[in-house]
Image (cartoon, rainbow, N blue to C red; front, side, top):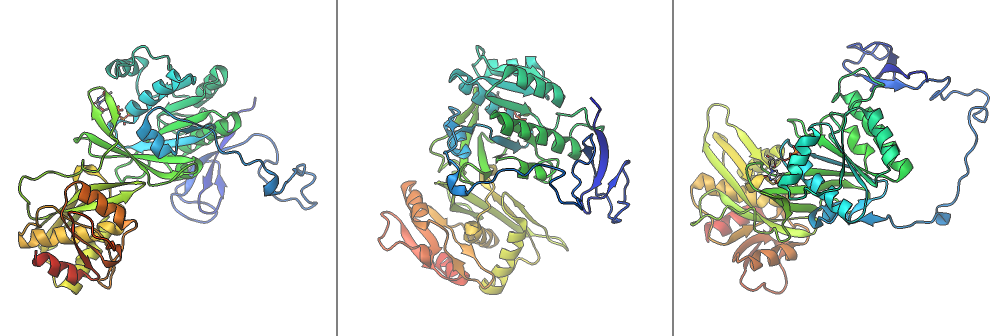
Length: 459
Ligand code: TYD
Ligand code: MG
C-alpha cells in the first residue's frame, strides 16, 4: 500500500507546503503550518467539479428526521457511581471520552478501577498503557486490591498496532493512557505534537463510531490549564471530563465540561485513599477548613454545580503591596477578581489599590459560577479590616458592574444545604430569599453591594 504523504497545512487559510515553514506561503501568517496526512489517491478532498458532482460520487439517500428510529443510547454503568454521575449514567456504546487533569491526580487509577468493574460486569475491556510498563500497571492493580483482574493490558504507543489489536480482540471499552504518548506511523512529528495528537484521536474516534467500541482517552493538561495539544480534541470527542483538586489534599473532583450524552457541569467527588479512589456521596462539607474560631478573610459560600450543592470556603488575604500590587487567585477567575475589586471601590468605598490581594478556594476546587462574587468581596473586606465574619456565616450571589447583587440559580436548595450543615446567618440576593423562613437560618436579603457591606458591619 502506498504510504500516505505528509503535508503541512495552514490553519488560517488552508494553504499547503511540502515542508514546514515558519510563514505560510499563501497567506503570510506566522506559525500556522501544522503537519497533516494527505491521503494517497487522486482527487480526494478536491471540491471543484465543473460538470457537477455526479461524476465524482454517488448521491446518498436522505430521509426525514421523523422516520429515523431515535433509540436512547445504550449505557453501561461503570460500577463507580461518582464516575457514572458525570458520564450521564455510564459508558455509551461507540462514545469517546476525553479525561484530562494534572499529572498524578489519579486518572490512571480511576480508569483502572473502572475497567476492572466493567470487566467484572462481563464487558471485555482493553487498557492500553503508553506511559507505564505492564509491570507498573500490575503493581498499581495490587495496590488497588484487584490483582485477580481480567482486564486485558497492552503496553504500546504506536497507533496502527493499537488499532490492529483492538480489531483482533474486539473489546467493548478501550482506554488509551495517554493520547499524548500515542503516535502514528503516518506522521514524522514527535509523539505529543499537535499533529500527532489530532491524527491519533481522529483515527480512534472513527474506529469508535464505526465499531461501537467505547474509547476513553487520557489527556494531559498544560501549565495554562488547557488540554495539551489542540483544543480541537475537545470538539472531536463526545464527552470531556476534567480532574480537579489539589494533589496535596485527599479530595478530587471530576467535572464534565462537555457531554453529548448527559448534563454538563455535573461533578463527581472522590477521595484518594490507600486503596485507590473512593466515591464521596455526600460531599457538601469537604471544602471547609474548619477553623476553631472565625478568622478574618474567610467566607463560606454554597456552590451548585451539577445537581448537588456544596459548601466551599473562600479565603482572601489583603496585604500592603509594593509599587505594583499583585492580584492573585487560585480556583477563581482572575479577571473577575479585578472586576470585583473595582466594584468594591466604586460602590462600597473599599479601596485595595495599594494592596496585594490573594484569593483562594479551599481544597483545590475551581469555581466558575459568578455566584461566588459576594463571598469573594466579603472575604476581601474582612481581611482588609482584620475582622472575621460571624460564626456560621454564608453568602452567595452574583455582583454586577453597577453594584447590584443578582440572584444565583436554585437559591433555596443552597440555603437548605447550608442550614442542614448548621450554618445560621446568610447574606443572599433579594430574589433568592425564600418566602417561608428556613429553620435555624437568619436571612439578610440584599439588592446592592453597599447594602451587603452594611449588613455585615452590623453583625
Ligand atoms: P495516577 O492515577 O498515576 O495519576 P495520573 O494517571 O493522573 O498521572 O495517580 C497516582 C497518584 O495517586 C500517586 O501520587 C499515588 C496516588 N495513589 C494513592 O494515593 N493510592 C492508590 O491506591 C493509588 C493507586 C495511587
Ligand atoms: Mg497516568
